[in-house]
Image 1 (cartoon, rainbow, N blue to C red):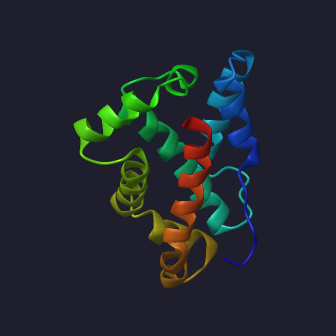
Image 2: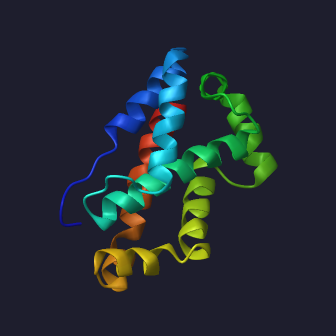
Length: 143
């Protein structure tokens, strides 16, 4: 990827909500709405990454059946093990799968290529790394 990207603002807000700072919940909700549309992105990778951040957080909710980050983050290892058995895949694999599906189902790469005037192959070549990057960030906070 040409320019390093990071989503520290997003991850920091998730951490603060995780710690119980409910005043940050509304701020996080607002940021998620901005990220869903890639607001204020400077590169196609940043826009795609922002969108994937929201998809991954929604995926954590779907995987656990819980909406509250602070509750999800308190789940014990045996609950995570149970969820893996119940779903047939780890949280990491599930999140990677739904991020890939989101990109493919929404024809997101084609739209980003058109918007940013980049080759689809360029985005495709970096997609796995971006998914891994987003996945690692959210997993580090959640588990």
